[in-house]
Length: 170
Image 1 (tube, one colour):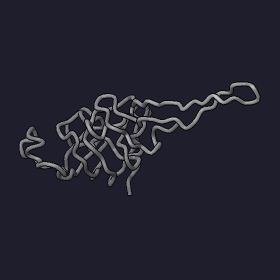
Image 2 (tube, rainbow, N blue to C red; image 1 turned 90 degrees about the horizontal axis):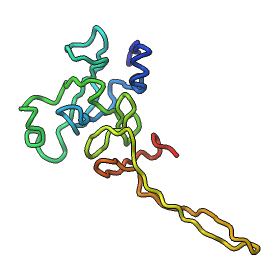
Image 3 (cartoon, rainbow, N blue to C red; image 1 turned 90 degrees about the vertical axis):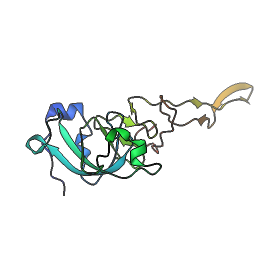
Image 4 (tube, helix red, strand yellow; image 1 turned 135 degrees about the vertical axis):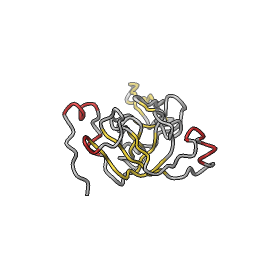
């Protein structure tokens, strides 16, 4: 069971998702750290006096990362210089949490692109309306059909953001 952390009003305003994070949740390191793209599980949350580093952060998020699916850790992350990927301490700016099934969000609510791992404060979508003009009783009436969309996309790499309308709801 997770114990409620007594975040301040200022912290909650800056990071509105911070109260939702729990040990056991899945997460991904974003573009703000050397572990970018690694996926793992939150194993510990440290706040206030429980923090073990000197990092200037509100919350230490301890992650146990998994080995990459494609390629070796040494080849994909040479900057790690052989350090382990278990018990990695990240700050609130460096991790996206899968609060909803498919999309990771930072604690300030930004979406983490599943491909380039950049933080998104906007998402692009191109929609086309299927418009019909029908002659009804001598008057032309406009009706909208179904139309189409290219899907919600990362504005940097054009990767599709498949959120099933859980976050980006119409």
